[in-house]
Image (cartoon, rainbow, N blue to C red; front, side, top):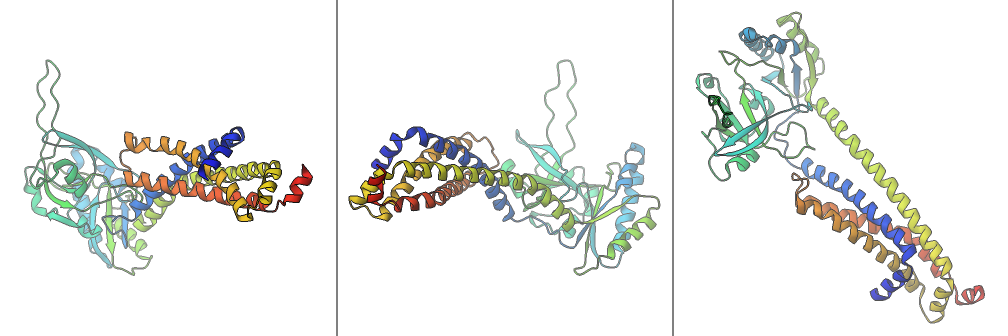
Amino acid sequence: MIRQLVKLCWNRKRSQALVAVEVFFSFLVVFAVMTVAVYNVHNYRQPLGFDYHDVLNVSLTSISDVAAGGGKKAVAGEVAQRLLSEVQGVEGVEAVAGTAIPAFDLTGMSDPVEYQGRRLDSYNTEVTDDFAKVMRVDVTQGRWFESADDALPYDPVLVNERLRHDLFGSEDPLGRNIAPQPGPPPAGHAASAPPREMRVVGVFKDFREDGELSGPEPYFFKRTRLSGADTRPLYNMVVRVRPGTPAAFEEALMTRLRATIPGSTFQVDPLSKMRRSLMRLKLVPFVAAAMIAAFMLIMVALGMVGVLWQSVSRRRREIGLRRALGATARGVSLQVLGELLAVTTAGLLLGATLAVQLPLLGVIAWIGNGVYATAMALAALTIYGLTVAAALYPSWLATQVQPAEALHDE
């Protein structure tokens, strides 16, 4: 049966080649859309690493500007401590902390880390001591930051489990220095002084600050110092409020902030609102690509229907003779469908040959082979489903051809 279908398709290879080419390009487009969809769904099902519910972000634009001059860092630190203390005293606040970059903000910091010659880039942010309490970060090994860290001669950091795996393997990361080491100095120049150590004091599960659709990335927290020579600016505050706190709380919080630092600029946004905005922003290009792919599939389906319709019209004598020799209506319908499936399979094989190169060559390293395999299977099922749908009406027309009608047309 298969051999006969291949022979029939080969005899009409000119007309069938166009369908195979359409299937080839359609498969590539659907495969690309499915890859993004499967990747996003896989990421969405993974733990986010923090709890954004009942958390507000306060942007401290004017306070961070105070730290622009090196001589005013101490002033900025004092102001930041005063703000944290005042907000903590507001009715309904459970915890408050500072952070350089809030979640769902579309900004980020990436810095190199190094251990025993292995160097990689990692996303990170600076936070104050109560950040884990506000965002409910789960520490799985070691400890979180504490006020006693002010006396340490090094910078304490916490790494996520992904960074621990990529940088340390099976080795215990606690107490290890991950500060990147300077390269060899240019000829005639003195060697650079080693950077301040960054020692790992703890490990946390994850912190995907770009939301559920972002993939797992190496990440670490640095501690923000609000006193001493190493005082750092405070750009944002995250405030956890009691569940059920009314929206009017935001106005009360803004009033307290303005009273604490008159003339300063603040912006209060719930993290849930920031998350929705980021989600919409990320989904817009995907939805647009999906609509383009759907339009292309409709065009391909119409092309398949036209080719089959024309084929059935031209082969009325052949179909009539088959019916006269005892072929059933179901057999004729399956033949028409089988021919289209054979052509579709040829186009899919060409597309799959090209698509499989992506995981083999590691073109997009952060997408796993499982995502590619799932996307390829879903794309193939979509094309086959489209093929069956496109063949329904032409195959039904073929079953309506009667032997006498075919001989009369001849």
